Image (cartoon, rainbow, N blue to C red; front, side, top):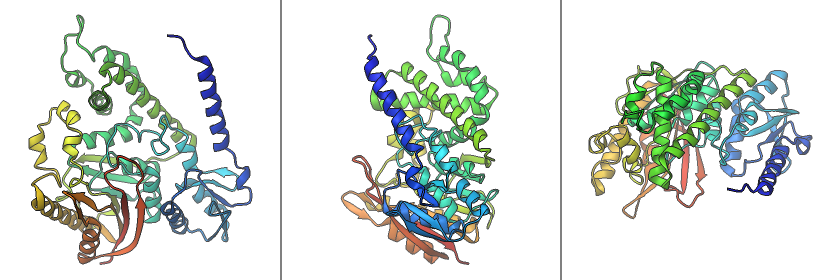
Length: 427
């Protein structure tokens, strides 16, 4: 194969130009704070302003909504605004921590930096939004964040980056595995790299390797973080083969190298910014029966499953089966995939009510629970989950503090808009 060197040179020049503009601060010289270049929607500006207020800033918006001037400047405030926010590129002539973090991105998607990209899970949070919400609800280092539907681990990773302690549960073993790998591989990266060639050689049975079960090969590895990492690397290749028709072995090796590079990026940025990572604990669990004490967590951010509109079991059937799970059995445990017609909606609403009851029980008084949710369409009818959630959360003792509309762009998105509901436990 002849390499198109001219094309490569053009791509390299394009990357150099994009890097140049990313680090250019000349246009922000008249502002105390400048928004990141990718901030473009109204809800993002709303969250950016809420972030500033939560972090103690008194400000004025200037430069066509792209810049902010501070009315209460201090070194302490400037330091806080460099380390915490998610929608700001610079404070004065210094780049924010978040700006440095998002430069560590092995993908083409602005929201898939560090390990966020690993595994194509539908319905992922935007990590930038989650970081902002963690700030907006006033969480500080050492506080405990809980998520009853931990999904792909976005809140877990963003909490870890901010030095918050995270407890998450999910009914799906696949989700739990994703969250663990994204947050725990950083502690085992040296051993992961050391075992790479050996495990690649055992991926496919051959004359010298008769083992048929890759998971059985992993059982001999003592470090669970390493086992989980290679198990998810396999599932990523399983997904590529099933969804995109890619060759399994080639996909495994390519994604494995990208995963390793992303974890190395994570470790590098932690050292560069001297970040003190929060503890992360993710386990299989049921949001309807949470094994935590009353009034024990400092904040909750979550998005209930859109199972009425999206069958999570069917969507990830290839990976769940590869893990050795029986789909008919686990279907009985998932919220929103049982029953048909009106019965399915009723079962979903009943399960969500139980989950909201648990959220209220374990959250400390006067603390915040954020629910990101949208109205789904099922059998041609709109299911008003947003209104249902507001009514029930208010009924059990929450006060709705903010309701922010978030539009969702993309041809293949099940949801076209979501609401960011910020509740405070009023009793």
